[in-house]
Image (cartoon, rainbow, N blue to C red):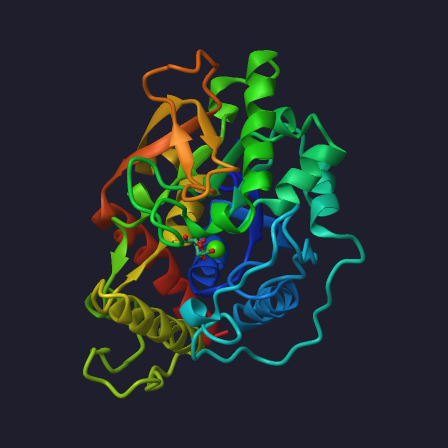
Length: 357
Ligand code: RIB
Ligand code: CA
């Protein structure tokens, strides 16, 4: 069924985020996508504390002129680990140098775990889940609704790192590292659902780890293509710019994204990775709408919880040594240009329309 002559049916997506810079880019991508219906946003502490994540989510909806999409406040602590945040990476407020507009939007009265369950019950078998932060809310939601794996049409996770380095410890990726117990509960829940034949193979989580997402290296040159697609003049960014130089883009959305990305560029440069930024979460959002964007391999994934040096590490049992059912589709290949083309062809015109609305 199509909603119009040539419009694809919009896919209902629930996004649980720890809005930070790349989470924000992922949310804008979903809002800009005609084939996405963002039905709810959950907030987990991560890049910044959960209340700042909530403020960022609400302010971003205002920036994008979005409808009243329910935004809920989720866990402010991991299931058992101590809370950690990453203001050094995403900025004191989580969006780099960007400033969001004032608004009167409010949070839902229920928390993010309940928001997951409400959305899944409202759209059984149709809802696409996307997690681009620690999986605390999702784990709590599965505790409340053990049938969640079979209620979701698809689950896409940005997290982990497979046969590849970590970005938080030598082997652990941030989202998993913040709450490894939650991640382990999520992979276990989907594994048990698969064992019980309660879900089809396509309902296993699609996991976008650093091995995949660090192929998506946004550069100032690519970012300038976004401004062009939005019909807005801007000043191309350079590592030679003074720190904190603000965007000159006329378009308010492009200006905010450029100011957010500059902080992220500076962080990656200081890490020795170049004046660029890995778009982890926007790739996961694009995969949530179109899994065909990446190549995956089905395997059994589990999370190290007790290792002194390896806690938070995600392990893929490619050789089937554990003798357990597959519980995930791990992303192993992507064409960065195809992703950037899709991101720009959606977000550019979206920003242009907003400037003229
Ligand atoms: O490791 C990258 C992930 O951690 C991204 O989701 C980023 O936003 C941070 O949450
Ligand atoms: Ca994130």
